[in-house]
Length: 152
Image 1 (cartoon, rainbow, N blue to C red):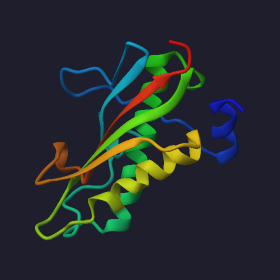
Image 2: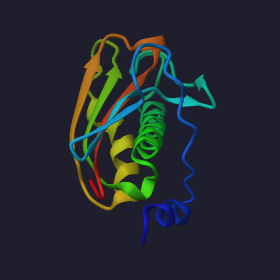
Image 3: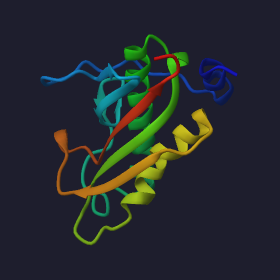
């Protein structure tokens, strides 16, 4: 089954890739891989989940935001690769969680991204989940990823 078919089966539609607001590319292809820049939980160009997790944002809200970040990243990877079917797998995911003091559940937040990619690709990936004091635009979560190309 192609990734396009898998997305249809899961009822997932890739969003439009957000135009960068600074000096970077959403994704870069090199050496058989697609490196995706950090993605925020933007929906239709609007940042929906802001603040620190464990204070203004619940763990559940943050996990949903991480899923949106991963979906935005997949769209950027697909665009750079010339289509989602040109991606073989997610290789590495790094998630950043804007964390209130005393919040230590960053891995559970980033599960929102990992679970989505597991549903789509059907395998595991390497991962890091990092707590930070602040993210761009006061986003609660940011996710970056590396994908392997199907036919480099």
